[in-house]
Image 1 (cartoon, one colour):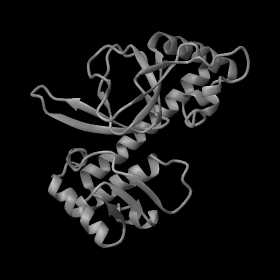
Image 2 (image 1 turned 135 degrees about the horizontal axis):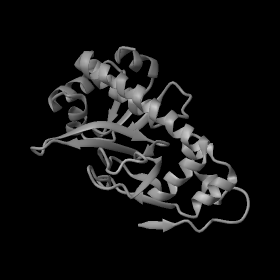
Image 3 (image 1 turned 180 degrees about the horizontal axis):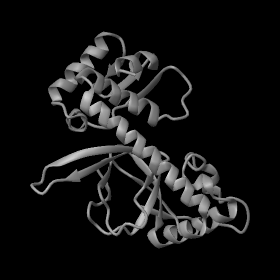
Image 4 (image 1 turned 45 degrees about the horizontal axis):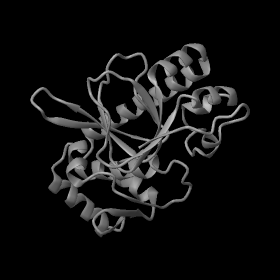
Length: 241
């Protein structure tokens, strides 16, 4: 359900923006209080359940969003109906590509997700007027490009064991960017079928590698879904870094 922003006032930062855990790390971190106030007049904050489509591939983009929390999976569809998961996005990633007529991928909530959405025309107008916002979007886009190249290395050169460890490390570091501890715990954001699709492996191979990591005490698994990593350095070593 969409919840219109009702916290807009005439001075300082809007209250919901103050409380937003992703504002300073996301594109909104480039905006002044007055600029945030202007954007907030058009923004809508909403929560969506896993499996909800946020963006449809090849459909006209009518809005863009900041991911506030949760994990979003990006997919592309082939002409014969086969689908491939091509990426994951986390808070505070920007969902959408300004100035493109159509969406290049579909985006689906992999977990419970919160987003703050803005009309396309508002964002594109503000980008033209605010070099800081344009710079922040470019910076985030280049970061995604670098991460995509790193993931190409993972898919093209790493062993099955390294691929599964790399996936777990990706979740550990991106879903909890402010974590400074050497350990982390989380629920897997995707089924083993989706993880296998993302890594270019079979589901059986993913399950075997998770079992091996568990037996070697690199990870602990509870109820087949909850994963704890007691030592991120050990996991990073197993991922080939």
